[in-house]
Amino acid sequence: MSVVKSINSAESNERLMLQKEVATQDPDTGSTSLTWVDVVEVWAKVEPMSVAAQYYSQALQAQVDTTVTIRYRKGVQAGMQAVSEKHIYSIQKPPQNLQHANVYLVLTCLERFAIGE
Image 1 (spheres, one colour):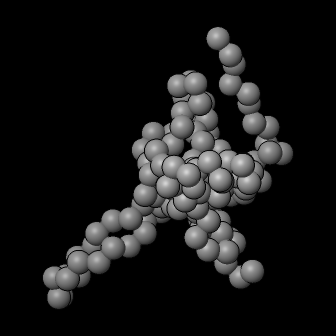
Image 2 (cartoon, helix red, strand yellow):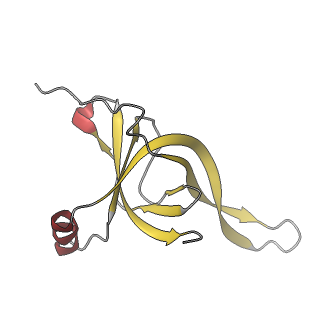
Image 3 (spheres, one colour):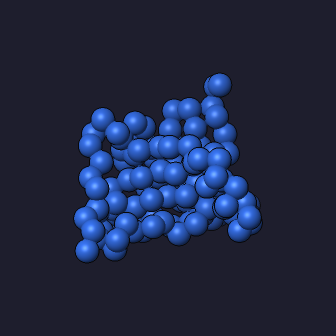
């Protein structure tokens, strides 16, 4: 049985706000719109994927270019987004619970925007 490698605080290089999309209804018009709602702020290790990993994921029709590792928490799922001061990452696949140890989640993401760059 292998052990999950811990991530030290120096490797957690971005503060991210995890958000989910929810439908809200305008009380005056009754129309419904989708908005992003903050769920929780986390420290994360954000890494661009290697060219080989990007090529493999594209062969599987998955558009991904970034992996984000956070401490384990329930409720994180595909379709959510992670937002920093400069980036918005769209979570493309269900998070990987490393070795089912409930210590870290690896989020496979597509960087949708680079804010202010």
